Amino acid sequence: MAQSQIKLYYKNATADVIGHEHGITNSQLKALAEKTLPLISQLNKERKAGETAYRDLPYNVKTVQKVKELTAELKDRCENLVVLGIGGSALGNIALQTALNPYMYNLDDAQRRAPRLFVFDNIDPPQLSSFLDWLSNKLDKTIFNVISKSGRTTETAAQFMVIRKLLSDKLGPDGCKNQVVATTDPKQGVLRKIAADASLRCLEIPPGIGGRFSVLSTVGLFSAAMCGINIDLLLEGACDMDKRVSNEDFLKNPAAINAAINYHFYNHGKKISVMFPYSFHLKDLADWFRQLWAESLGKAKDLTGNEVHIGPTPVKALGTTDQHSQVQLYREGPNDKLFTFLQVKNFKKDLKIGPASACASELGFLAGKKLSELFNREKQATEFALLQDKRPCLTIIFPEVNAYTVGQFIYLFEVTTSIAGELFNVNTYNQPAVELVKVATSALMGKSGYYKRKKTYKSLANKIRSLTKIDRKFLV
Ligand code: PA5
Image (cartoon, rainbow, N blue to C red; front, side, top):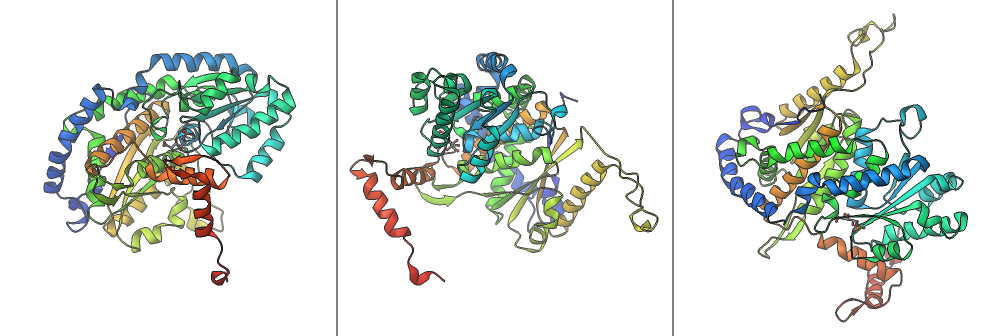
């Protein structure tokens, strides 16, 4: 089972199933194949030229070795692993943990083979305070993995400064050195400087890897390995998918078909893409995907500099929970969404539904059935209902959720995003719009100097204050 492959099923997005107005026709698919084919070979060439460094992460033997060495060194004295990071420096870690460790991992020692994992991807003061109150007498048994590619992200820097002080107050001058692992750029950035200055243990994020494409680097691998996840199998799964998504035969390449179908529907009024896992374990992969899709494809300008303001809006839903929250809208609201279900064939654990009470014979149809059957029938029922309303549906079928299939999924959606970026003709790997928020926050927090030629943080702070100052006339 470990070696089996995930599959993309796309029939329920076609005109044969949902009609010509909303479904994709054979001739449209053919045209998409013609448009996408040269892009696959272009990406293959770029990859050979080292321009898409994330593609080679699953083959990086040295990284795996280093991660394993550090894990072996720290594991025995670590009861709690705390990741400090945000965006691409946290979402992959969360997704791997949710996917590959049991639901009660942190709480039930019997289900936990390794340290508890806490990923802090926010700076919410009551949340962090509550956590640190719990942690304060366990600091010597806690490893903090501070992750920042740029080494200058305000939230991560602030979290780290809180922890650094706490460690030195409670454990003395060597507290930080003993309890912190810094994951950052090999050469640049403030975190690199701090790590060198304080002689912290370090892991390197290879150059050319953007945050949202970094989960298979030291960024995601260290916390995974520390928490007992089989990182070899994860990377093997990614390598398996690499072969499939490099295939220059369109109909055999799941990333090409996935990207092309998403692109088609975006251009045919379905600008929202809903990822809809029917598995708790897969729910945070939908969250990880949300960042990958949004930051990579949401762009103001295309590659020739035209103003396009383009990009599908990713939404995450969870089966069956959101059947009772979102499906009303999904069926009867605007037909502006493409659905991607994630379905699991074999669940690692299952439960049998008990007998119906004597007074409730109408529940007899459930008695004795497996919960996994009900779960998958609910997916089937939801898909059926959406198809009745001519809503296009894709499904990613997982034979089982394990490190091998999750590795495939990650790689599939990373390459899907690269191909979609080519189709949308945007720069997939930058995120210029995020920068202004970062600069503006620094300005408001009193940073001095220039953020751009001739533009000071101070003048920016004044501009922001005047624009966002509460005008009482509009306060009700
Ligand atoms: O995908 C991205 O590039 C971003 O989401 C970053 O990962 C995020 O902003 C954190 O950046 P850094 O790792 O430099 O602290």
